[in-house]
Image 1 (tube, rainbow, N blue to C red):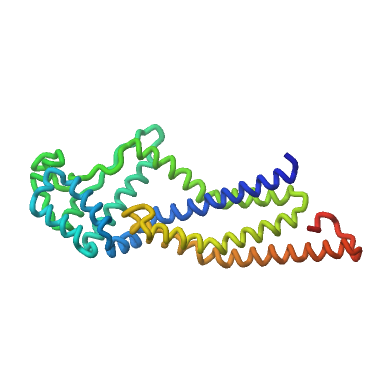
Image 2: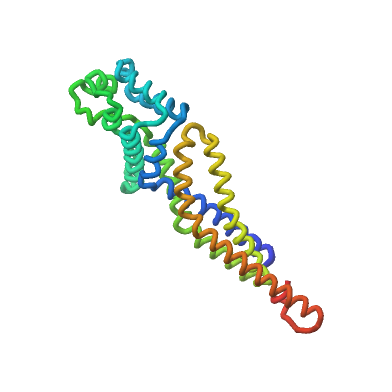
Length: 291
C-alpha cells in the first residue's frame, strides 16, 4: 500500500475513532448525570407503559406481600396517575443513582477481587409510596420477620453482568479520555504522508466542518427516535439524559464546524488559484501546492 493508501487509511481511522469518541462522550455524560436530569424526567413521566414497567418491578420486589391491600393500592396509583409524585420521583432517582454508585465501586475493587451482585435498598422507595415494611414483607423477601427494614433490597445486577459492564465501561472511558487525541494524531499523520498534504488538509477540514455542523441535526434525529419509543418504555428517561449530554457538546461543535469549514474552503480556493496560474504559466508552483 503506497503513501496515498496509507493516508486514506489513517484518515478513515481518524473518522471512526472520532465517531467513537463522540458516542462515548455522550454515554459518559449521561451515566454521570448528577441526578437532576433523571429526577426531572421521572417527575413528568406520563406514559402507561413506563408506569406499568415500574409497577411490575415494584410488585416483583415485594413478591409475597404483593397481595396486601396497601401494596395493590400503591401500584394501582402508580399505573393510573398522570405523573409520579415528587417524593416518589426523588426516591426512585436516589435508588437508580445508588445502584450506579455501587457499580462504580465494583469497578474500582482491587485486582483479583471477584465481583459481587448489586442490590438496591427498597425502604426509601416503599416509604415514599406509603407502603409499610411489615413482617410479612420481610418474610416474603427471605428475611427474618424481625429484621431491620433497611435490609430489604431488590437484586438488580448479578456478578457476571458487573464484569461485563466493567469491560464495556472501560472502553467507553478510554475512548472518552483518549479518542479525540488519537483521532487528531491519525488525521495529522494521514495529512503529513499524503502526496499533496495541503490539499488533503483542506479536504479534511471541510469534511470535519460539515460533520460538526451536521451533528446537531443527527442528534435531533436520535432524539426523535428515542422520543418515539425507540428503546421502549425507558425512552422517556433516556431522552432527557441524552438531551442533557448533547447540550454540553452543541455550543462548541457549531463554532468549531464553522471555523474548520471556512479554513478548509479558503485553503482549497487558494490551491485552485495557484493551480490555475501554474497551468497558465504565470507562476512556477511546486506540485505539492496544486490540486
